[in-house]
Structures are given as C-alpha cells and as structure tokens.
Amino acid sequence: MSKTAIAEVLPANVLEHPAVYAWSQLQPERIEPESIQLLKRKKKSTVYRLVGVGPNGSAVIAKRCGTRTAMLERMIYEELLPQLQVPTLRCYGFLEAGNQEVSWLFLEDASGQAYSSLNAEHRELAGRWLGMIHTATARISATLPAGLPDRGTSHYLAMLRSSREHLRQQLTNPGMLPDDLWLLDALAADCNVLEAHWSELEAICELIPPTLVHGDFVIKNVRLRPGPEGLQLLAFDWEYAGHGVPAADFAQFTGATISPDVSAYCAAVNWDTGKPTVAEIQRLAKCGKFFRLLDEIHWESNLLEYPFQEWISLPMSCLKVYEGRLAQALREARWS
Image 1: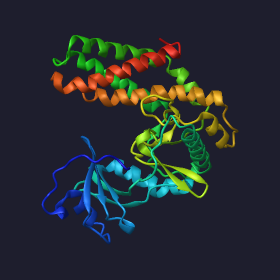
Image 2: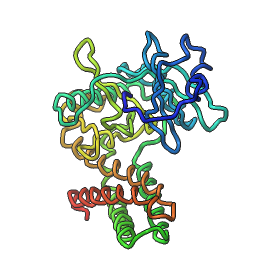
Image 3: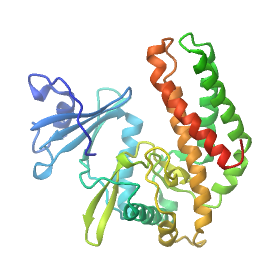
Image 4: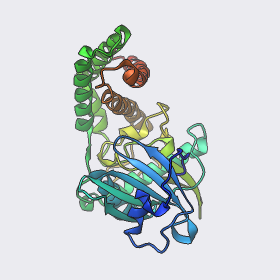
C-alpha cells in the first residue's frame, strides 16, 4: 500500500485525528504517529498511513470503510490467506467506528518493488502465484470461510443489467449533452450484444473450477518483495474478493491489470481434474476483459445521477473510453 499521499489539514492535536483515535482503541504499544498521510478518499472509504506506530517503527495502514467490506478483508487476511500459505499482510485489528455500518481496519503497510505488466518476469511470477492460489483453494474448498461473496458469471450478468438500466435512466438527465446521449445509447446497445452471447461466456467459464477471486487484480494492488527463493508477489485490497470464476484476474492488458502469464499459470496449477490448457486460460482471459469492463462501467454509471454537466463530465469521459474498449472486445469476439 505504498501510495502517494494526498494533502490534508491535520488537527492541532494529532491524537484527535479519527484514524489515530481509532488506532488507540486497540491499545497498541505506540499511538502517536510521526506523520499521517492521506492515501485515498472516496465516497465510501478513506485510507491513511500512520507512520511509525507499527512494530519496529513501521507504518500502519488505517482503512475506514463499510463494515461488510472491512469484515471481508479481515477474514481473508486472518483466515483464508494463511491456509493458502502465500505471503500476506498482517492484520493488526478491526474496530467499529461508532455504528454498525462503518468500521476501521488496520493493516501492515505493503512496501516493496512496484509491479510492471511489461516485465516478463513479473508476469510469470503473477501467473505462478495465481496457480498456487487456485490449487490451494481447490484443496480446502470444503472448509472455505463462510461469507465469501459470489463472483460467478451471475454476479457479472447482474452488474451488466444494473448498469444498462442506470444508463437508460440517464437519458432524461438534463445535464447530458447530445454526444453524451449518443454514448449512453451505444453503451446500452453494447450491453445488449454481450448479454445475447452470455451463454457462450458461461460455457468458457464452466471449464475452470471456482476459486478465490481477487476482483481488482491491478498494478496498484500488488507489490514484489524478496523472499528465500526470489521475488514474492504480495496482493492486497481484497475488498472486491469472492469465490467464483477467476476470469477477471486473468484479464490481459486492459486498463492497469496485472496481465499474468498464462503459460506460467498452467504450469503451476494442479487440480484433481488435471491441468487446463493454455488455450482454455486464454479464452478465460478474454471473458475476464468483459468482466473488468462491466465492473468499470458499473462504477462510473453510478456517478451520473447529478443533473449538472460539470459534475458528470469526468465519469462520461471514462465511459467513453470503456465503450471503445467494450466495442473492440465485442469485435474481437466476432459478436458485434
């Protein structure tokens, strides 16, 4: 989680800062940080780095988010990843933030080398890591923690339908320009085409056993650390994780995806039913591109509810990019 800090006005007494106050409730050895860095602020979550309060003077990540999200991540860090025997961040604690809807999650700061999808060694490492994760998940499938969200094809189909409905509702938004209305129509039409071929996506995805899905397997959510046998991949920000088809985690070179090496994955994975072929995983990765785009379109479409052009211009510019990528993916699949 080594991210660039955002400027923030701090209180005169640092102990009054909400992240520091929440951290103090866990009764750590050190409470007052050397500095506080705001890493992310969104509508439903805020992330801080508390410098110097962790073990041996390390930094602690304080994440304020919805309680369901915090509990999911806590479960993955404390219950699931240790069973899979992969490198993971240490979870320092969980605290409800005065009500049942919002909570704090405190995690080890993810330091290490940045990942590059243009680096063949990094992509091979990511492929082996996924193979190890999926093999281990299959072996403990009967004892997976309860509460993992569904990440099967039905999850993405529901996302497609929800996004399309929201896009259509915005056709009467007075803040929309003529070109915006054309874009909304084009995106809705793309969704229609994709839904018409959904059974073909499902047939491809059914060839792969359900497994742990990260859900946001992108460059900003991984670091590389030296280990006993070379570089190790460390993944974090599991708030979109679940159990289902791992297609989205295989998406190749769309946005800032990890783009794991498919051949390295096939060499590393080992199921009772046998190994998948490179061609099967490549087809799965193409499905993953659709799933990633649906996720991004769903996110941006939810930001269009305001009736002012200046407020919706940014999400509309993002949707324009995604429509181009979705239309191209449909053409590549010969579904357009």
